[in-house]
Image (cartoon, rainbow, N blue to C red):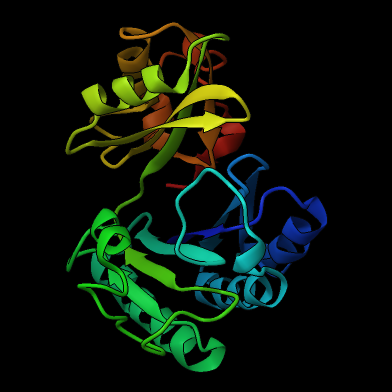
Length: 259
């Protein structure tokens, strides 16, 4: 069993997000859309995850014109990130194979160049060097005119997590906090999201540094308003957090991935 978390560059037009999400069929487990980021995160899970990822990607390429996109989140494409992650007894080798099949398909059938990340290089490396020091691994050598490029990945399960700072705190403070807390297990950006300061994070090793750790790291440096889980969290990570903190950390059983 694999998880695939497709990030598309549309979060403001709910009708478009709903149409893209519907393409995921029974594999769709969760949708998180944000108008300021102008991004939606679709969590796909199960034995049909590869077919679902292709259907979602095709619908997104058909509906999203990156030339019209305005949003605070970094992006390379309409279908920006397509990472496969092993769940349960699945292996990283299975995730890499699924990634490679998806990238070959997208490059050929959609005509969208794909950059691979995972064992070879990190996603931040792809974002920094795409189309300059780094050529696409599949598909055309130049960006698709309306869909840009796809970052296709294979990685362990991670947790996308945002902490909103208190009203009146500016984005410079969020950026300072992000610089201080980021490290091998935690990627962080300070963003201005609709006039509010946000520390946007990826917990890349959530078994060792989970949502409570990330929240507390931010709160130790700046006043916090609230937390926001983006997508889903492994059940083992949820179980490691005292239930009394779940509401504060925006965690629920309904947002737990299957083991």
